[in-house]
Image 1 (tube, rainbow, N blue to C red):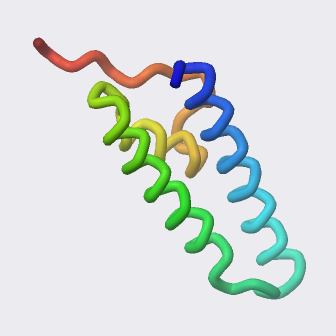
Image 2 (cartoon, helix red, strand yellow; image 1 turned 120 degrees about the vertical axis):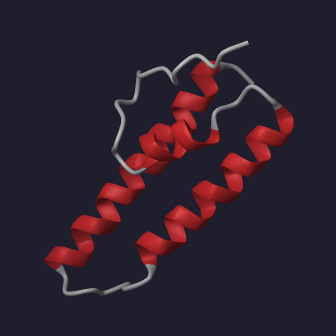
Length: 80
C-alpha cells in the first residue's frame, strides 16, 4: 500500500469518528459504544498495516483518526 492509501483509510475512519461523536451529542447516546467500536476497528487495521509494512507509524495513524494530527501530516522521522 502507498501513503495515499493510508491517508484514504485514516480519512474515512476520522470522518466516521466525527459523525459518531456528533450523533452521540445530538441524539443522546443513541449508540453509546460506537466511538469505542470505531477506535477498535482503527486499532486492528493499524496493527494489520504495521504487519504489512514495518515502516508504518501506527501511533501517527491513530492520532490522525482521533483528529489529533492533520490528515496530510507526516510522522516524525526516526533516528537511524
